[in-house]
Image (cartoon, rainbow, N blue to C red):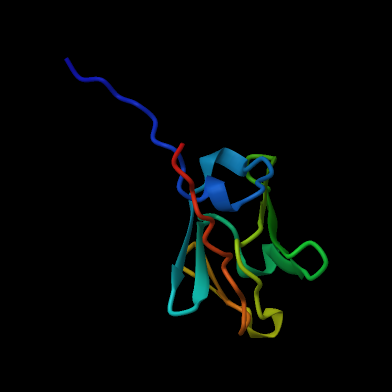
Length: 122
């Protein structure tokens, strides 16, 4: 007997997500003092994708819209991410290749990740 169970999405603990078109895949990880986000967005053209960093809310918004004239259908993609550390917004870069959007967001210098809290035994 095989039992399948859904594992928690590792990105969910870092994000405030909006609904996503068609189960598109996204991944976020930290590497060398920057966060890297990748989005699988096949079928979208570069000029159909918008990427916006909001300084006040510290959120990255990804949105896209594609109209398929042959089928008469419109596809949309909306996702919002809030990294767990402060970001140097001037250093954010993005590339779109072969249906994959990759965004790198450098962690701001001097960012403190928090502090240890002592747990007392009773």
